[in-house]
Structure formats: structure tokens, C-alpha cells
Image (tube, rainbow, N blue to C red):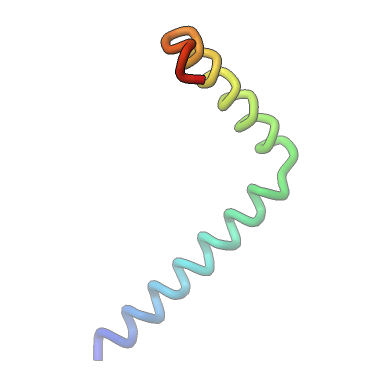
Length: 53
């Protein structure tokens, strides 16, 4: 039946994404990159809407 096979494939995809996320979280380079990007976005928001932050 197709449905059980589809469930297995979805489970494998979820586990793969979970693993990729864990690797990314553990990467200090990615942490620094996302932190810098977040800071840039927050600075832009603060310039546009200073009363909201």
C-alpha cells in the first residue's frame, strides 16, 4: 500500500531535517552569521519604528 510507504518517507525526511538542524545549531560559524543578520534586521526595524522596540 502507498500510504505506509509515504509515512516512512515522511519520517525519514523529518529525521533528516532534524539532523541538519542539529548540525547547524552546533556550528559556531552559522551562529555568528545568523546573529549578525538578525542584528542588521533589528537595527533596520529600530530606524523605521523606534517606538516599537
